[in-house]
Length: 357
Image (cartoon, rainbow, N blue to C red; front, side, top):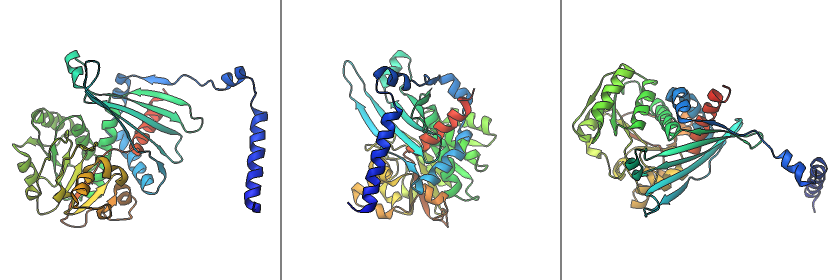
């Protein structure tokens, strides 16, 4: 053995001997040592009444910056498909996790969606929990019954970050294709960046969305009759649909430049944005290794119209100033599939806000 390797082996041996001396050998004592306080449970009402999308924006922005620098541990998401049978489903379960280096907690999230049979029992089709864990001891600190509420908050916060860095102050008409819970958080988050006029299109719910958002944000919102009409009016377009079909066409977009912030695709079967739009300008991912598998990028790669080298940047690179965002009248697509970094960020925010009460 070389001297450095031999010294390393000796140190490891000494450390193991010290550990054996430090820990009692009998099982009862070890069980005592392994006792941690019971994790605190925060129910849905507590979570929803204490957290808002604006709470998450700074933390999520910092998480994207850290992610681009390689300072976030983000495993690939796990997906469990629940096929419909007499005893189950249909539905999907997504498990994501992340740790932002240097922060005192990490997060594991379980999100269940598309359990449509629940509606027959007057239950929502989606549910979920965040488990916030101490990065010091590895012990679970809190379980947040958020039923996708915190997921929607961190998605909205990512939309705010994308709008902040990938649009300019002259882009003041904002379109929303899809008007559910995520769209509401996108609108609230966008309002924290700048004042805008909102337009909305959806098969159902656009009227309620516009009425609620106009009253809440104090900005004008109006319903349009088609996605084509919306695209013709909008400088910034948020898409947040079930992504079963493409939601716009390249010819519909304003020639003065548009920023598209897409958050509907998070599975390999989903796509909102046409491949020619993705390839036409700056494609920006939240995390390329993820968008290439479950995001908008996947479709363009499979069609052969893009390669991963065509990715202009990850969002964190724009945040860090490594590459510019909007420079002129180009098309920009920001592909938000949702990362474990965002989950870690909102998990830390939730624990900081509620864990001390």
